[in-house]
Image (cartoon, rainbow, N blue to C red; front, side, top):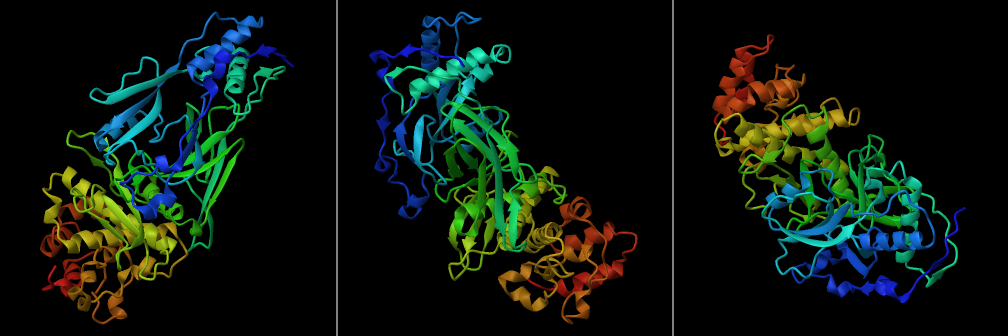
Length: 528
């Protein structure tokens, strides 16, 4: 065991803490009903990875006679904050996946976890500071407002760390002691602290499966001061970080991936599930009573399939900005009721959604949370609208506004039905999710719900609803796939007339014009 005799003098008094009261965190722009979901910061903490603290530790060890194989240490990075004014600016710093950004400072204690953070020093709640560490010499995109807060030294980021790990660990140990909350003015003995690897296991309740299911593909952060790392959970909800720490870390989930971000109801801010400050594995079970966290987890599950899973099998619901640069879809979750509507999407124009691309509501008319399958499937429905819009535009078929509701809603309903049915295999009757809309009749056409028809579902399934509901369409067609419909039919279909032409021009070998005519005749003369 290595013993180090250290005398700490008054010059190290920079380790004093600075308190930030909860009242200082609440913004006047924040709705009081959401305050309970806010992240609240406490004391400003000394960061063991701040270069000045590491250098102090190195100097002390040298004076105590430790013979290092190097004569000095240099910063490995810079702790910075960037003032973000737009989605484009945020995307420009997040495009480098090696960088990890938070919208709250890294050198403060979290006294109350939550789902979002509000910086009361910013009068305009639509802008935010993003805090992170960039390597020395790293150049952020031009035009950004950047403040350099302090230099950082993270031993693992040294090129020769593997060669001199024991020596770097000694420096890190002492820096941790210097900055520790329980630090005394004199340390008589200090032994080498063991290192540990963060890991997590995340699951969430599923009403339909009546069990907890792994939360796959979620981004889990582990942070101590300015040493930040992230990992993505696998199909079993597990992740293990590729880095070791000396002491406790702050765990959290950030609800985003490369193609989407789940945002707050106000100003589309980042959302989190803040975890514990602990040493060891984080096991998190998201219960239905967790409310907003539960709903965001369910939205995440649907978004993961829509963007990464083969079950989706159609165009990814991504978008690009005005110069062709990829930008994330913003999915806003509202922990409220919106009548009978669960979700809404406005692909290509999000003015009415106040900057979001998709909005999902979580409560029914009685104030109860919707079932898992409702949130899951309706998220898929709205993302299908986004996929349809961006795919349609990419094909050069003009503005998506030329596609009427009958086509748009029937296609999104088809994707919703097919993907949900495949994911929850065996959980529905032979008609699949929501009965495959097989009870649709022309009588519904006079209502808003009349545009949600099974016309595309009927191209896939082998069920003829006319035999059970006399006024329902006659469906003798089957065998199409989502991809075949999207690639060969959807792009040419703006209304019933163009759908008819597209179907007859792209028949399967076992399909006739008469079968297409019989399928569509119930839709004739309806006000779509």
